[in-house]
Length: 146
Image (cartoon, rainbow, N blue to C red; front, side):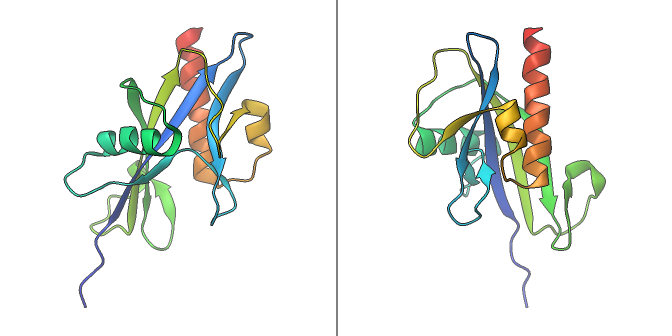
């Protein structure tokens, strides 16, 4: 029996600093999972992870940007989900590439999404990887504007 190909996804954390200095991140309550997640989805054949992140952002939110940076990667080996650097295994069930976009202009309300502050996000139901990467994205933005 042939092994299933590795599922590749791209996720994009979209952060925004409000006029009063509050950092917010864009999330939606995933219908099937019942947890808060940033925009993202499957990488299409012949598409880069970077391009997939941009495409998913526009498809899901209507937002566009060309200013994104790679911030994280997570692998699923079937028995455990872990950061890229913990285990270089020959076959992976899933690989998720995380990118960060920071919006400088006024943000708009996007149907199905909410701009969560850091304190709101800390109380939101999500998985540990999303929580860790979101915290990291906040730290990166705060370090950049400090």
